[in-house]
Amino acid sequence: MTLPVTIEQTACCAPGTALALPVAEAERIAHLFKALGDPTRIRLLSLISSAEGGEACICDLTDPVGLSQGTVSHHMKLLADAGLVTREQRGKWAYFSLADGALDAAGEALRRV
Image 1 (cartoon, rainbow, N blue to C red):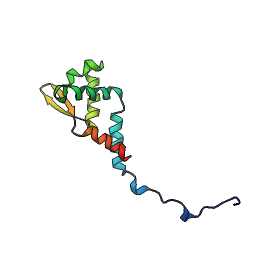
Image 2 (cartoon, rainbow, N blue to C red):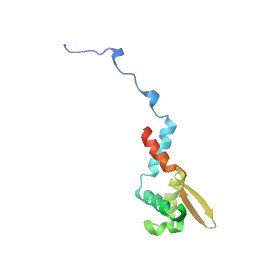
Image 3 (tube, helix red, strand yellow):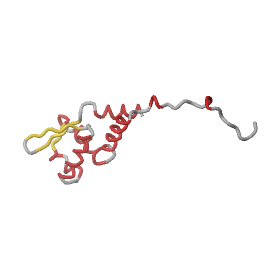
Image 4 (cartoon, helix red, strand yellow):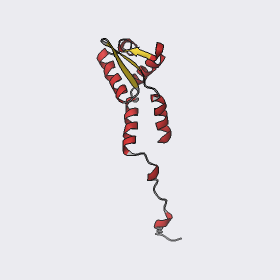
């Protein structure tokens, strides 16, 4: 063989774009993992999942993470927007629980990527 060698167009692999995630799906998954990308939010999910009845009042989440109610509310809004938790208002307090299948969906997203 002598240089330069030219590879014929037909010898190259076809791009695998048929298996690529659609843009909207990639954005949804990125949003989900961005919400999971903070240690405080991971702790909040853990506190909720281990709470009696699988739900926790915002008032019970502030002390364990050492943050103000406003900061915890911000973290919880990001988790809710990503579809990881559900929120129920009871009087002046918000109660949170893990969204059905949310963590399974996160694991499934990793398997597809």
